[in-house]
Image (cartoon, rainbow, N blue to C red; front, side, top):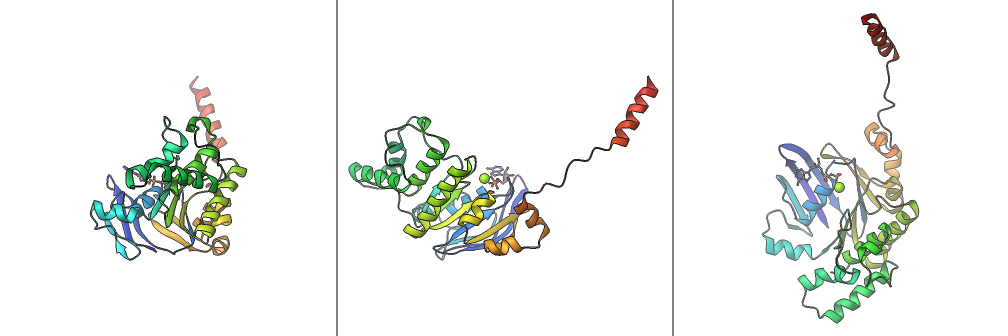
Length: 263
Ligand SMILES: Nc1ncnc2c1ncn2[C@@H]1O[C@H](COP(=O)(O)OP(=O)(O)O)[C@@H](O)[C@H]1O
Ligand SMILES: [Mg+2]
């Protein structure tokens, strides 16, 4: 459904993505993992056509979006729903107003139809009674769920999720994961999920791609990920740092001694 071919993107001459190649299959949940700052959010923005690569191509259903003008990109973007990293709700608006906004801006639907759709999508995330609340009145998990419901407002074929479970307790993370699976199984939504939560990977992924130093270092099933012998991939999935910082007592002692000598 989506093809990424030799994607290359730098910021201030610092390469973020150097050569990313990936195929996103229709109807599957593809999870993208990698350390903070490795370019996961940049990758999602490239897929949405919000930014352009320095080199390489993005194809959505065979159409190259990298060379498209704004008008054409808007048409393609209607296929997509997006859950932003911080849910990105407007504080001064109610849940209903927040959710209605994309349809008011991008469709000719009458407001009562939009209101019905808001209600339907809120029910899908298990929160049928929050439409009149403001974001400040919701917990972090509830805000995420409103974000998920809003991502469905344009009835997308593909939903991109940027760190949907980050900052949530394990139970709420599981609720969110179940919603992601539900969207995929019940609505047939092709899903791309960015996360560094390994629990989520094993729970939801049909396929996992790991980005490191601007390339796809691993691409395969969660089972294959568990079994990989690549030491860098293993280090990430096991969450191991380089090891404890070693304090060389000898040197400290010697310095102290030196100070004493100086005194
Ligand atoms: N608009 C921008 N201007 C400059 N640097 C950026 C911009 N967007 C992203 N970057 C840099 O690109 C790198 C990858 O960012 P990002 O994709 O947000 O990482 P993550 O994998 O944590 O989502 C970071 O080093 C970040 O500083
Ligand atoms: Mg990010």
